[in-house]
Image (cartoon, rainbow, N blue to C red; front, side, top):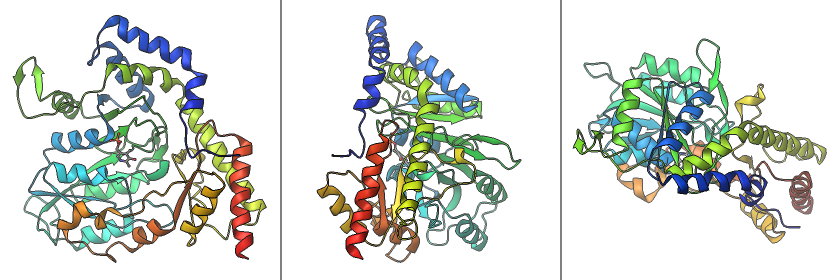
Amino acid sequence: MAVPFFTTARQHSSIEAELFDAVKRVFERGQFILGGEVESFEMAIADYLGARNAVGVSSGSSALVLILKALDIGPEDAVITTPFTFFSTASSVALVGARPVFVDIEPRTFNLSLDKLASLLNSCDRTDDGHPIEPASKKAIKAVILVHLFGLAAGAHGFCELCRKFNLHLIEDAAQAIGTRDVSEDGSVGFCGTFGIAGAFSFFPTKNLGCAGDGGLVVTDDSGLAERVRALRDHGQRTRYRFDELGLNARLDALQAAVLNVKLKYLDSYNARRREIAALYRVLFKEYGLDETIALPHAPDVPELHSYHQFVIRTPMRDELRGFLADRRIGTAVYYPLPLHLQPAFEYLGYESGDAVESERASKEVLALPVFPELERSEVEEVVAAIAEFFEAKG
Ligand SMILES: *Cc1c(COP(=O)(O)O)cnc(C)c1O
């Protein structure tokens, strides 16, 4: 039996009538750009996340660019992030003219290392207005983009505190972590994406809340910043045909908002099901005695701190295992095969192999297994049995 790595078909067939009604409503109204559907989604998601403002945008990537622009980050500035993430976490920085600076990950969580970030910041000279100066480029470091990778909370409390100390904006890339909780400095629990000055989300179809195309969101408690993002997603106009500054065409489509209005109701149950599947993987890997042979994803004490956008294992025999599973028609994926500091597009930054050893090692060892809410128990059993067969043959 083939096990798909991911499919939207099962989810959509279960809510097809609701989705088609919502799409039909958009056609009947004829309002395709912004309007009521987008506004009601913005209100619903702001309410769900407990954020003061939510602005629907065209993708997670444009959410990041719009946040950086709205914070006036540009060519004089540097922004720190992880090299072990999707490309646009860092390309957004370069696209506004600023310099991406890469700090390595914590191998157990795959998330940006707070210790490594602190030691870089502590070693920096400061500008007159208190910003750390990046040693290689001499640019002023203005922000950190914290990624909650694979749906695991990155520990916002530590980053909030460090960013305050160094006069930096904390931007959260929560594209993979919608509905994941994290803990703030005062110990209270909130959603990933709501701790920093602003959070970016993506509704790319494979994400935990996916639409039927591209879509994204900016959330922020800062109403001035939200207004700026609102103008910037619409060419920089606040009143019709009066352009206050250079913006983009980066609006959320009404059709996508209509789909999201339907699916948001199910997000918590989808994420709960992802956690159940992750728990099942752990039980089965233990039963087969494989929990030492392969490294399983970090399991936080509080289950809600992970929403398993991906269930990522590690083994030095990754490529061989992946081929073995492919022969059995079991889908897997590698996130990410080449860390960003070694990507051709970032060659101009001057990084070399060895500059982020944990990210480089992870890129050779990680393997994402099927995890999506509609995956069946029998399919999880089949994946684990096949992995057990592979390691048995290896002795
Ligand atoms: C998906 C993703 C993005 C980009 O989102 P798009 O909607 O595809 O533009 C950015 N960052 C991370 C970590 C992502 O996973």
